[in-house]
Length: 379
Image 1: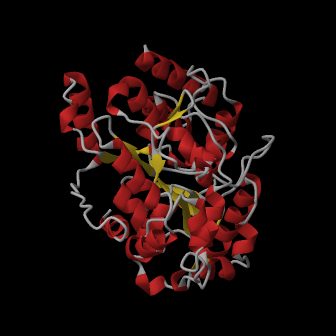
Image 2: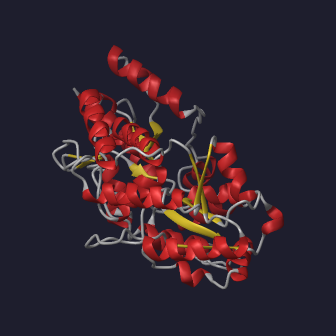
């Protein structure tokens, strides 16, 4: 935001921006409180919201949001899969900022020891990934992946890559009768059973598993790159590619996302100024994105940013790969899905089901329980 202010001030020298940093949980609590009290004067002009929280907040607290109808912003320059998080009844309420586009990040030296290259993990289905993972583990003794026990991040990425969601377009629950979800949970269990994925107990252990060379790599939103690159001694030993696709699903892709956030203009804002500021920076300036990429690692959702020289520069840490241009291109191919108003409730219920299935429970029964739990939360 500080860099965006600098860019905007070049043509608007009297413009000033007050920036207040607040953790997301506190932002959500404040939004809830202000919506209930109708005290909209305390809303900031612009605030950042997690993508997965978009639909729920728009539906529950519509009076908080301004919209982008008259902003003049070309939202076709952002991936539809991302703009849809904040599109409700055909009206756009959020401007995508940081990318949650998923990557497979892998240690090329470990792959080479087992006789593989990054190309062998590109555009593959999960069945092929599992074959490679078993072979790699037998040769170098390392699992391919790690994941936090009780978390459903990988499952959610799997189903989105195949164009599926936990909710139907009409908002009803799509869990127990979701064939793609059944396949994804089955794949996850196989990964664990074969020792290709190891479960750890905390986020810190998850980060430590790949920076500490316990596993070959990770599949995660591109924001994980910041954590990967803390292992500076591993520079040149990593490469990035797309993610495996779900077998047996027509139209399944090798592209998905996890996380990311969008800018919202509040109903209390100087709407014209706020929209023009965002249009001139986050939705209109390659100079801006070129500046924040190396300093913050914030990868753009704005597709034109990927064509700049900075985005196309080779990244030494990733063996000279133009990682950021690749990721912007990946983002444009992520399937658009309906996250639903009750995304977090559904995700948590599926997380519990995954734990049960890994422990030996019947898959269909566990997902039926997750469906019932979600419907109860919605009721």
